[in-house]
Image 1 (cartoon, rainbow, N blue to C red):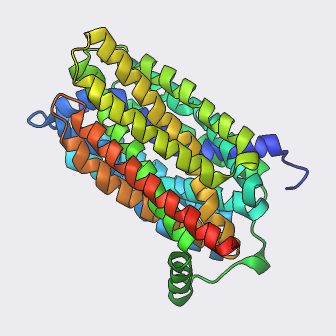
Image 2 (cartoon, one colour):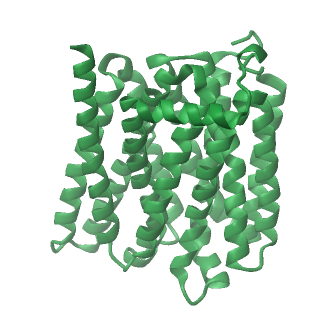
Length: 402
């Protein structure tokens, strides 16, 4: 780091870059019923594709932003991505059909991939190992304030100006990040450390990553952890609305849950150096599998409406908590051996895990049938598979140390 930016300010800016994703997804949640009624009245469930289309575009974009930033530097890629994000927001604001809106959301996701992935590469440029995991955890803790207030902000914007005005807020958010970065953040990748953007180099880097067993396993587990998060996000608003008849209070409950679960990143930052990344992820996935199985069993019993709602809020909190104690660690596990190709590694990790997670979440979201069963079964399955893969990763590490 240079004297121009302290570590605290650096973490805050990185958190804002991460928060582009959460803000672009969570602030849309209160708008889904109105958008569905206006643009897809015959199939309201299709409104959920507004979330997964953004995630799909983000996943595709992450594959290119890292290697391009390895070749050109970190800041130019963030500038380009934010510009595309703004243009896509304008198209979404003016859209007259669901198809145009979904296409604009894919473009938005492509643009948002710039700040999201390059921010991770910037951290890897400057930090490594458990200290890198600690920085990521603190940034994730700060950025959880955004999903806590995003639905309330979205609901307020809708009430005052209509759902289209949410896209204006996206433009303002991206502009603030660009101005802050331009004025305060130096370029973190020196010219002599840049790698030309050549297809053979990219192929070689991808092969290197997937031949490394720990990196490969961490990518697959991150896919499953993102899958649990995305499936919950796609179905959480209909569950509050249709099952529990709490659409009006949904933004406040969502914010409450996000604030509580945000402590996961704080907890992880406090214990990761002592406990280790792999153990935390393994314990978290095993615990979530047990909790989700208990939710399935309890939900099938004769709970009162209030009891059923309290159970879901608790479960939603644990699912968000899972993301807070796994995603930063899994990124750090995968990035640690790949410091020499940090941008490319961040891109491959983000692209593979995000696209596959979106491919899981989209069909599960369309299965919503007025119950939590499809969501619960999907999350239980992903947590069990993730837990098994983490145990396998532990056995591999033990053999390497033997």
